[in-house]
Image (cartoon, rainbow, N blue to C red; front, side, top):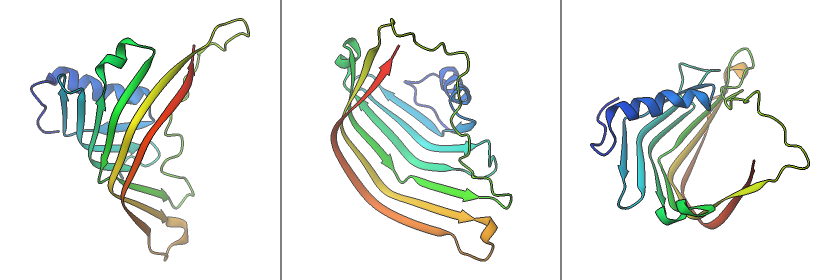
Length: 171
């Protein structure tokens, strides 16, 4: 890990990275986090995600992940994401010699979450995303069981997505 922006104290940076294990079976590495309170922009530089299924080979590498949030929406019942940028993401999907996928069980199942009864109220978390872009993406798939086959690689170039809403029921 290299530098951390003066806007993001070193202790909080390390805490944020160490907390990633609560969400995935694996770990996340970052070179830098830059938070601009004035613009509502947060940038994660040098993002690397490792899965527990393949701890020695990165599942995802990304030059930069940048998110701009409309701060005023944080005081409402929705989150307004003005823009998301995925800069040079490289996704390496693989099947090892034993037939296990490197993305197997990446998401952590949270136990002990009580089920809702029919009488409980549900609320909706709405996330409005104005735009998202992916720049110079690469997807690689390797199957070690096939032995002699070369890896399949797809270069996706740049993708632009405009305005959409994500709605999730929350308790």
